[in-house]
Image: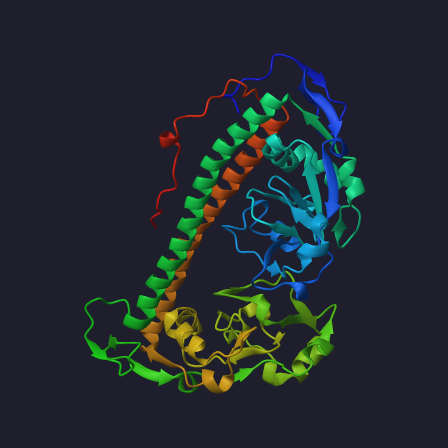
Amino acid sequence: MAKYKAYPEYKDSGVEWLGAIPEHWKLSKLRYQFVFGKGLTITKEHLQDEGIPCVNYGEVHSKYGFEVDPEIHTLKCVSDKYLKDNSNSLLTKGDIVFADTSEDINGSGNFTQLVSDTVTFAGYHTIIARPFERENSRFYAYLLDCKELRSQVRHAVKGVKVFSITQAILRNISIWLPSKDEQAKIAAFLDHETAKIDNLIAKQQQLIELLKEKRQAVISHAVTKGLNPDVPMKDSGVEWLGKMPEHWILKRLKHISPKVGVGLVINPSTYTKDEGVYFIFGGDVKEFGFDLTKTRRISRQDSNKLLPSRLNSRDLVSVRVGYPGITSVVTDDLEGSNCASIIIIRRGSYNSDWLCAAMNVWVGRQQVDLASYGAAQKQFNVSDAIEFVFPVPPINEQNDIADFVQKTLNKFDDLTQKAFKQIELLQERRTALISAAVTGKIDVRDWVAPDTQNVEEPQEATA
């Protein structure tokens, strides 16, 4: 923030977490600047695809936080019959919609602001804050988003597992207000500067997606065409596969693995324990790895009894329901674990890492997609999985491809982590800039908007 000047004089605000504010700014409470109301008394079952757009607490906590425009953003709707008796839950441009509950303390105080004139309802689990003075409603959005104000909300919320805010909590929140002219200037400054930061974040997010696509393409080529660009090719006989190396053999999964089965399906929850070995479900399986932070447990005794679903090191497990086809290799530390309702591809004379790669790229995923069924949750069965076909190289080439895939994963993971780190730094800068402007740590009264042609536009990222 060194390039911005400070105000000439400050005074103690008397507000914890805030410190000094510009000498001429005034202190107030949210109750003196807003009138509060609540959203519709409905449930998820009342939502539909057409009708009057409705902002529910889920949208506030997800991608439509801070601002929402039903003309641009896809929202669930309610029937227009609600217009008759629920006018108090209708939103006006500039209104703030808070989520009244959060699963974690950091989400307490999350909100979104309606930025269009579209007829829109506040939905379930929401609190409406309507500013008395709408001309500077954008300033209020930035004020409510700054960490100094959010600290007050987090300190006041109730609950252990679910953190709840009430109208009473919000009414009592302390705020600090510059003059109306300053409010307008601060909002315009932050609109301009945060847009530049958001564009940079969008570039990094685009880069991450391109890296994912490039990684998939590189690995796909390795497992379908091999590593030698000069190897003679032959027609595979499979239309979607095309050519493959001449000396490779096309095999079905049932002829690659000695056994393909499925994890425990009937009442797996009855085996869940507080301690024991890992009890792996589909949600624990990621591409080329596991997320064991929330994995359930099963006693070692029960796991040893349930041999058909007991896992051995170097077996493969593939998600069967939800995100079907995501596959990982069972590592040595998971030897003896058990699993529920996921496909188990038993280890054999093949290289497990090679087959895992083939399952995770299009050669495997396309076959999973063709075999999948179900509207709410996609899934596929063992009877289909055993018929999947793969171009199989000799074991020495499987080993080389597996090594190549691991190096490729390491390379792209490193590039992706750097992009995520850049996003984190940009988000930290965005947060710091908002706080500095709305608390008066920087003076932007003399700021002039640059020529709009000079505002940085998001450019296409390249991987």
